[in-house]
Every structure is written in C-alpha cells, then in structure tokens.
Image (cartoon, rainbow, N blue to C red):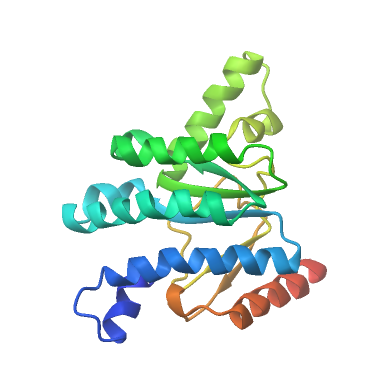
Length: 212
C-alpha cells in the first residue's frame, strides 16, 4: 500500500501521516472489491520490519494507533474475512499485537482469508518456514513442507502482486510465495487507487497468466 505520504502532500495536507489514515480506510474498499470479484485470498503489506526500525517514532506510533482502531472495526464490518497475520509481532506494542491476535481468533472459520503482513521481513519468513517444517517433519522436508509452514492464510502461493505508486521493486514482499506471481505496477498512490484500477490489474493478470 505504497504512496500514502506522497498522496497526502499532493492533496495539501500539512501532516503527511494523514495519508496513512486514508490508506487504512482504503483497505475496507479493497476487501469489498475482492468480494465483488469472487477473490477469497488477499495479503496486504502493512509495515515491514525495516519500516518499524527506520521511520520516526512519531510516524510509527501513529501507524500503530491506526491499527488499534482499524482492526476491531474490520473484524466487525467484514464478516466474510478470516484475518491472519505474518511478521514479527514482537516489534509491535503489546496492545497492537493483542488486537491482531484477538482478530485472528474472533474471525477463525470465516470463508475468505485476509492476511496482514506487519513487522514483516521476507528472509525471516523463509527461515521461520524452514524451522516449522523441520519441527513437523524432521530432516525429511521439501518445498511443500516449507510452504505449508509459512504464516498467513491457508493458500500460500500468490498469483498477482499489485504495487502502487509506480514502484517497481517487491521490497521483500513474501519472496517465497511470489515466485510465480505476475506483477502489476500502478502509478496511482494507494489512497487514490480505484476499483477501475483494480479491475485493470485483474485484466493484466488474466492476459499474462493465459499467455504463460
């Protein structure tokens, strides 16, 4: 969900962190679009481990405050979606980590799956997957065992990555799971990304997946 701060500056907001609030609210629209298209598995990259370590304490604190507000609302309003988390929750304040774990518990068993990548590091994710596979299977592991041990929703392989704000790098976003993914780059900042842009991304995926 890239470009929140740049969107806020372009919109004339004195505090660029206002863009994060608009970006968080926009996730609700994304989930609605996915429902309309029959998409049942979605992962959103909320905050990387590097973001937490490198951004200012004020900005990161503001983001955590948004999560504390947004997560219970998402549980109540999006009754179709089971929530999952991937990332190091030890990097988060206790209240935020608790809210996320509570959301996972309260939404278990719902028909669709929404994963939030927060405090996320792609290499650490792979290491955790390998360790989980070793615990489950001993030394007799394969790629399927590692994939099954990764955190997040039940379907691990990602078909399509949508990258907003014109950035053309994955920035460590689920490297194991995106091995075969198509990548759609939108010039739009995340808060300005529309349902028409989402439809364009799905058309791009359809055309390229068929060609492949």
